[in-house]
Length: 431
View 1: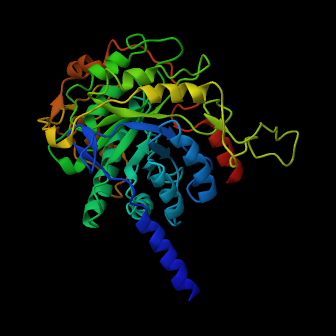
View 2: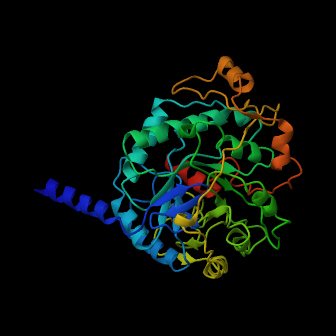
View 3: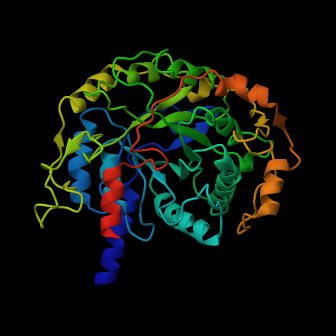
């Protein structure tokens, strides 16, 4: 009797997570199933190293406060696919908030130093997809976060694309909703244009990603559309054939954070960019937090302190003036977009960038690694020197944004990780 009751309650919760229309891709834009263009006003949300979507009381506190400033999405980096998330997912849905979730974890992520894509990784990705595909407010999946950070590391790009190929195939074979599957890139000027085009290029749509996103910390302090380099971000995607958005943004030096860049993202960039996700909800040692759950407690002086000194649950208290500054921006920014019925794109996939030593070491549209294929000299040779199905000259790749772009000051806490140092520290402490 008890088992049946529990199953019934869980099923009821899952079925109840239907308050929002689903998100889908059409051309280079995101739309709701109601036909309205969807612009992301999101916040990175990772309270704990493993899974922040298991404590519904905490989800209720946070979702309620998020909704007051117009938040319509969260990004979560690590979840446990074996757990039931129906309560938190319903809470966020009830507050008009979608989820963008990473499929990988620290143990299953693709590594540019020794790239691989195998059954263990795919199985872990599938478990997350199996759990979250059932919720209507699951907006999209990431197959990787900041995997590539160097020119030599570009040999890992085919493995990212292979991960997308196999997770898309699994999604379709299971007859799941076509939840978009994409990638979150580090903002490396020398890599960005090639990677951006490579993940969307080729004649085989089943191997291309459904969206591309960027972790960008360019607009810092009193800046502008041109000084920050946002004008170049816009210039480089005017003919892009899949949706693109900022999966992390919100420079915090110098303080305070004014979020002036949001006016550009939802203004002159709104024709091609689908919004932004602010890094991050919780205050940690990197000082990117929008809220705190209590004062910092030094672990060196108090044995009862959290591992990194930052409380990770309780009543969220807005951090002033950053929280209010973001609220003021979002409340004034409502791009009208276009109706799906009136949007008839005629976009084509970009050419795959050609090999350039120490900058982009993938030779065009090379054959992707098979599942379980070990990265060795032969594989590397096939990637760097293989026959390309569609290549672009190195000069073409550079002219589309690789050369002449402003050097960017990335948030040092986020390079190569996409997660703040505070989060990483507490993660290691709890392992």
